[in-house]
Length: 405
Length: 225
Image 1 (cartoon, one colour):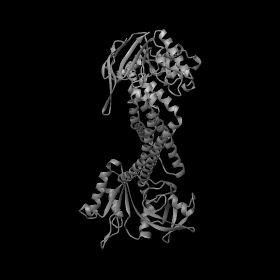
Image 2 (image 1 turned 90 degrees about the vertical axis):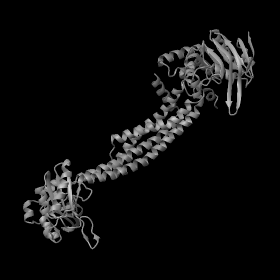
Image 3 (image 1 turned 45 degrees about the vertical axis):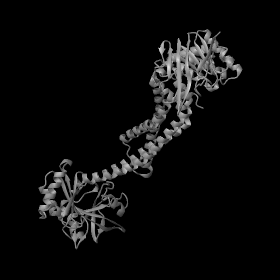
Image 4 (image 1 turned 120 degrees about the vertical axis):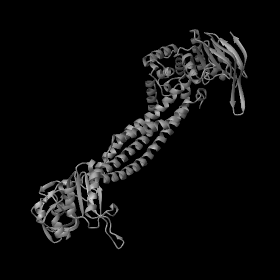
């Protein structure tokens, strides 16, 4: 009975001041909606970065050549030429728990075809590249072992490279492209994958690694070696074994002086998500300020209400309604306002996220935890900002309140 | 039924102590109709607050139905008001923009009664107070002065109180309406209710059977008709 009484009194008194209640709710609605929207943008960014890193391949370890130093000039990580095809072969034959090893020679070149031209990444690699990097074929075939042995002048186009050179959705298999004055026959097109964080696999042209070394780079070095481990749990061990093997092969005893470096995908994801979660926090705390302002709006309204209804509170107390019920009633009014504000704010925030995805093309993710958080915060705001006015009302002395003008 | 023994009330306002009651003793028996009269500042309002369990005396004892009220804490005083006292306030103090029925049911809020029981009781009291049934769902601001007074009386009756206390019930009314209100109290008295009225107008006090006159915090005279 008591709870029903409190809810009924709350309903009556809030509906007696519809405009004021509505405007107060609006403050909370905007606060909650902006928290939900901002967090959804942040989490969307986090997810899309993580998934684009995942799209490079799974359980991937990438080996880069070390830094080239000459005359005190640091040319930057990966600038040295220390990795060879033999290193890749050694990793493949000597390390356990790996699925595939794909060395690659990549460099950007100007590419021409039938009058169109573009500057794109030319990746010289081997058939295992498909498995290591999760690439699949749309049309034709990928590079074969035979083509590597014969240094065949064949090329597989990424879908974006194909679009740039031959037009969208065309089928240029059998036609010719020209890279660094060498003609290549197009033998296949890869399936579009979507952009990844580092290099766009769709905007690449794949050629046999031997062809790339002989006709394009002119040396025996490779730019990176990608290794796919069998599963995530063995990655650290595999990474350590590769490191040891390469140190041994390069005749280096001190790991500090290694002429190569290893990056594993899990680390990249962890780094990227720590950046995006900071970003999410930043957005959420900016939105949180508007929630705070909304809460102060609630307190302001409740204080006005309490002052306005002083006589009524005095009457209630005089006819024997206990102090605690006066407190509960006013607290319940504040919490009800924030609760409805919370519900509407979640809906509005959700709509705004959908709108942002539609109009701005940003990926947004609304997680149940952000909804729960929003509800928790709005109920909390109601209690915190409603308590002081409610306490004030409950402590009125009945006869003073009755005589209040 | 009501017994006051040597009631003293001192208000501490800053450094100055104001003595509102300087030792007031009297008894009110069941079924009496008492008017407490005095000029403003005489202490009659303080006495009313003590009788109505809104305040406790600084010294002395107040018994209602044999129970000592002067020793109760705030929550116990609330309960006592809810169970035993019916108030009719100056200018009646109805809840604004609220139906007649809800106004009458107000004292029963947060008690262990169902909505149906409360409404039944409220209708009974309204009928008793003489408000026509068509007005029960009207809002309080749609009523005339006489109707408001009937609603206020019905509200005072809803908890079946031991005593009905009226604080300047005619304070804001013209002479004609004042007399209508006082007739209504006389009618309640005739039906066996115990009534105490606070007023500063001698002609209003004339409607009661007994007049206690207060001045400067002490009883000046206590006359029964």
